[in-house]
Image (cartoon, rainbow, N blue to C red; front, side):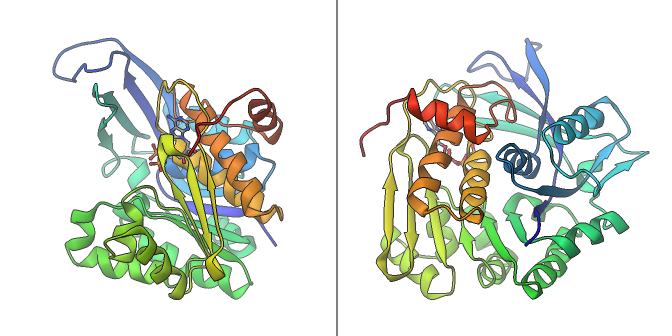
Length: 317
Ligand code: ATP
């Protein structure tokens, strides 16, 4: 029907190299790496051979060029990326805690990343899109909610579909405005891709089974729950369920796993694969991504994933 598109932040990521190190004193860092959840997502769709585009902005600088060159090389449509002359490309600094948690210092609001513009090329991309992927993180950017509202209408009018990776925190949703936003997006979502607690927050339910039932009753057609090292689960209409164990890998950098997972699942489903096969390939994409330093360094083609699956073992559920 048309490309998979998304809207949101393009960043470079610069990361600590030592677990436990803070940013309060000088230390060895590594980067810049191309990043931004929507950019990782669209790059992975393109790697899988899907047609993919992004509405976003970068500055007229090396960090912007790094991202554009990567996305273009990997086959993504870069026509709707604006180059903003007087703002730098957005950035994120990441450090890792000993328990596996991450802390980010983001520079989005005052950078090109926080200045997403609907250019003529962006309108043209939306007009030919067959699928819109919505990332919760993008709502922090002024104007993105309106861009998405219009894109949803256009894509749905053409018979296209919508996926939603909520990427939400409970405090933000409880603050009021967030709840309505999430409910409005859920009302048009075909595929929901929550991770962990996001499922319960999205459904405003206390347990997984109630949350799944409520969301499916509310009109979502499929839910794919990301469970990190515990793999993932698919929930569909009429009680359909598939659980898929994670692959056993050594995690080097967790950032981007969820985006590679979601992009792979979506692209496989859009290509007509059954949920079980799509889930297996998505688990492989998430696992493969965490073995590489840099959020977009571990993106995978279908051939990469098939080779990875053939040579790997999975955790039992
Ligand atoms: P992020 O926000 O870091 O991009 P997420 O929270 O959205 O990630 P996760 O559940 O962490 O999503 O990861 C997505 C999928 O990637 C998991 O369902 C799993 O299949 C795979 N995965 C992630 N981490 C690991 C790991 N350490 N080992 C094996 N597979 C993993």
